Image (cartoon, rainbow, N blue to C red):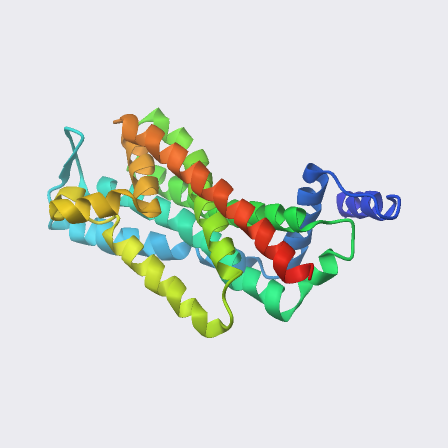
Length: 274
């Protein structure tokens, strides 16, 4: 609690009207979210279990019936093929929860962001802090899932150490884009569009079967979707079979997250500073 009190004390002790630095503002917002979740930690970690169950049921169960796939010229087991896809999906889901449902509640119902703007925080600080928290949640999910993969012998390269930072990039991309889209949502019914968008991504981003299973026009479409870029990046890192696709995925995910963050800042200006 001493660190909590020190952080709050520094913020309260500022000269009236003075703005916080970007790092200090982000730290305070992370602290606020940590305190909010501390008494309900099981809610925070529960999302990690879904991809683990998928891995056990599909990667291991169906894997008994499928001999494996060739990936960039290397033969890998079906479980080793599916696991990186689940890793990317875990990062997406972890980031998505806070970037959509929780963000919408704070914006429209609890009016938490209005209260924040009565302090030295700015709309950019709010956007940056909320995005950092959402990708942190996705990163925690992914790090735990990566540990499960390693324990099951589904990690075949030291490059897999970079899969955790890669998961943060996936969280950054989906967190930024989903927060931006959430600012246009009018009611809870609009969240049906979230499921409508994420479910096809989850099923058809080469998560459970290779890209070659699709017709050529569909392959082109799949390759420009964000989860596919994340799946490719994680799969290449965990198998150690790297290509230029990983570099393209990094650029794609960073650009998606940064653009989303910029849009969120402008939308919050319009919604909260009328």
